[in-house]
View 1 (tube, rainbow over the protein chains, first blue to last red):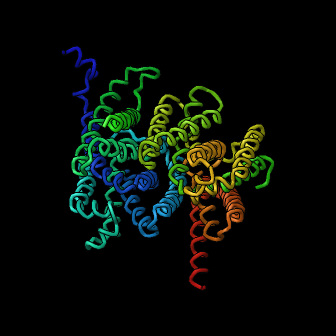
View 2: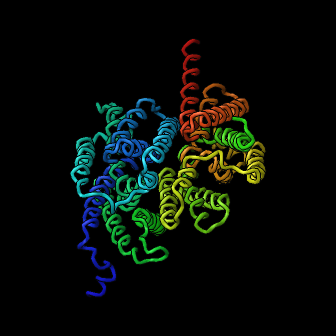
Length: 290
Length: 264
C-alpha cells in the first residue's frame, strides 16, 4: 500500500508548498470554471468563452508591463471585452460569432504589441510563454485571496441568476415574456465567464483556459440531463482533472526527455480530452442500446 | 521600405492576403468563425512539434491543421459543433504546450509563430507558398457554386444532389491548407482577423457573391500592405496592425451599410 502511494505521489509531494498553492488555486479556478462552464455550453457560448480567454492575453501582457498581478489584467480586460461583445453583439448566433471574432482579433493585435514591449523594454523574456501557457507552480500563496475575490462574484452571479439564465438559454422569447431582462442577464453571464476564464488563465494559461470552461461542462451535460446535477458534475470533473494533473506534473519531474517536468496544463487538458471522448463514446453506445 | 530584403515580405504577404480573402468569404458565409479561429491556433502546436523534431515547419503545420479540421468534422457529428471545436482546439494547444516545454527554442521564435513575422521569409519559401496558395484558390473557385449553395441553402442543395457533409469536409480541408500557408506570416493568433474582417466588410457592402469575394480580396491585400508599411516604420509587430486593421475593416463595412440603409 505504501509503495503504491509512493508510486502515485512522488516523494515530497505533500510537503511541497508550491504544490499546496497549486492545489488550492487550481481547485478554486476549476470549481468556478466548471459551474460557469455549464451555462456557457448550455447557452452555446463556447466561442465567446474561448475569445474571452484569448483576450485575457491582452490584459495579462498589459499587467506584465505595469508589473501588477496578471490576474488583475486577465479579469479587467475580460470584463471590458464582455461589455463590448454584448454591445455590438447581434442576436443571430452567426452574427454573434462574427462580432466575437472581430473583438478577439483586435484585442489580440493589441496583445501582440504589449508582449513586444514586454520583451523589448523589460527583460521578462518568458512573459509570452507564461501568459499563454501558464505556470501553476510559480503562483505565490499571496494569490489565493485574489483568486477567491474573483471567483466568488462569478459563482454569485450564477447562483442569483440561475433561473433566468436557464430560461433565457432555452428560449430568449419565453424568458422575455416572463419579464426576464434578457440582455442584462446575457451580459452578467458573459462577465461571469470572463471571471472564470481569468481564474483558469492563471492555472492553465490564457489560451488553454477554454479547456476548463468547456470540457468538464460538456462531459457533465452528456452524463446527466438536469442542469443542477450537470453543474455539480462539471465542477467535480474540473476539480478532479486539475488535481490529478498537478499530481502527474509533479511526478513528471523524473520523466524523460528533460527531467524538468511536463507542463501541468498539458496533463489537465489531456485528462479532460480523454474524459470527453469517453463520454461521447459511451453515450453513443447507450443510445444505440436504448 | 522597398529594399531588396523587403521584396519577399511584400510578395508573400500579398499571396497570403489573397488566400485569406477568398477562403475567408466562405468562413463568414458559413458562420464558421470558431473553426477558422481554432484550426490556426491548433496548427501552432504542429509547428512547435516540427521544430522539436527538426523537420520542415510547413509540414508540421499542415499535418496538425488537417488533423484538427478532420477531428472537428468527425466530433461535431457526435457533439455540438462549438463544443467539439473547443475540445479539439484545447487538446492541440495542450500538445503545443508540451512540445514547447521540451524545446529550448528562443521565445522570440515562439512569439513569431504566434504573432507573425513577415521579414523572415526567404526566396526559396515563396514558391511552395505560391503553388499551394494557387491550388487553394483554384479549388475554391472550381467548387464556388456548390460551396455557395451548401452555405446558403443546405436543404435545397441536398435536393440538387450536392452532399452537404462532403462539402463541409472539403471546406475544412481548404481552411486547413489556407491556415498552414498563412500562419508563418501573420501568426497563429491573428490569421483569423485577416480571414474574417475583410470578408465581413465585403459582405455588408455588396450582396453579389463574386463581387464580395473580389472586394474581400482587395480589402485583405490593402490591410496587409498597410500593416507591413506601418510595421516597417514603427518596428512594432505586424500582428498588431493586422488585428486592428481587420476590426477597422469590419467597423467601416458596418458603418457604410448602416448609412445606406438609413438613407433609403
